[in-house]
Image (cartoon, rainbow, N blue to C red):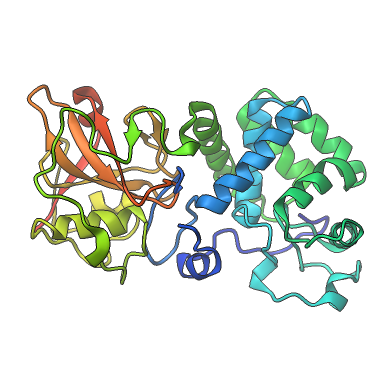
Length: 345
């Protein structure tokens, strides 16, 4: 966050995220987030979910609305990917530079505080004898020690319209230089609102289970010990889907992209008819069985394990937002008809 315009990297590549965070590696859920390829990803991972919960709870404690909490999360997602240790443009920490309030374009933390506000954050961390990278400390700074911006934020998070509140936080509190990111901030805000209000961030509710649901069976057991993580990073939805297909001798390309991209790859038959042992490609933000939403940018991918005579479908899936390595979910016939099934080779 800065008072002067600045360029900032809005989305970090997955190769940067994985070695930096792994990331215990939603996905408790994403979420979203959950998805994607090894090239570039802004998915939701365990640390992100934990940080999101801290922010969400604090907003509600301050009398804010759920829309306000989600709006703040959407902005923080774009600013820092909800990573409290992030420094603008992947820069390294330089204490002399960091403590110089006249230095701009060197933003820190969840909200990417810059210049004097960056210095205030660092001084507050020192006074508390904690690392400035601590998420709890940064949230406390946000709501108690950010000068007049603290009072402003407490007012803004009481907004009742999700999109309007997201924009207000971006323009008045973040004072973001890259205002063309508004649509992205609003998409993430909606993602977080849906995730936090549906209870899917825990990854275990709403029909999502680490075990095969009663009344269903797998044609082959799942053993991930031999799963490859070359072009698709470990515990991403694409990693699991690609490897699970291999268990059946089914091949998908090594570089199919994010979950949402699979339905658009040339050379594959794609249908809206549920197909056994196919890959399900969920579009960005699409509801997954009415239980949670795929990442608004990257979508999601899953594998069709079984289809019942009533048209219901059992899918298996992974994602760093789930607490377990993979989970199962049952889709009704009506839900299943909404998705794209990619037939492997």
